[in-house]
Image (cartoon, rainbow, N blue to C red):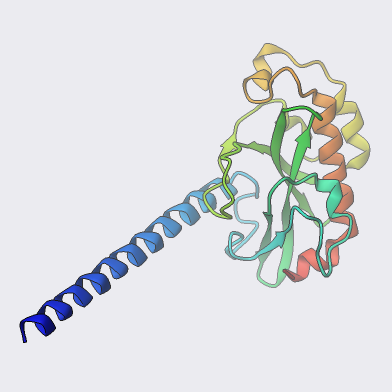
Amino acid sequence: MGQIHGLLIGLGLVVVLGLVGYLSEEVLLKSRQDFDRQNLTLLFEPGSFDNDPLLDSVLIPASGAHASLVNVHLLGLNRDRLAYIARQGTQVTAIAVPATADDGFNGTVELLVAVDMFGRIRAARVIDDLETDTLYGVVAVIQSKWMEEFTNSSMRDILGISWKVITPQNEYDQFVGASITPKTVSNRIYDALVFFQSNRIVLMAGES
């Protein structure tokens, strides 16, 4: 009886520890998701959506292999990322597309480019590269006045922005570094718009 009693106690501890671990993971996941939700509000206009863009999203693989999406290589992703969909009722109002600008050496900048259904940029933001493979808890937006230049821009406007003078007040160098040029970032944002135009219908449907 003593052995059986000890065995039951041991099994009970295993179950309790497993439950605590599961609950801890659930709490961590919720915390990461709440973090991303808060930061996604910086990408979409207030009142322009009533869905949950974090969960109404499309997984975009870094490998570029996708059953429906085309031209994924234009995004330059070095890890799997999500594209976030903003809807007002049943209407899609904007989609935030991920992209990675790479200087070809060791420097990269992670981007989110929110585009409305007219093909104009609602917001282009740099997000902190947290060097993680998780899909949640990664939308850490870095503020930059220079990036705000892209707001309300279309594809034909981006070339002009890429050659604008970057001043210390822009805070550009604080998050980019010397190895990545404004033109590199601008080119990737342009590519993100091409990707968006190529996949508008698939992205609107939220197909993963």
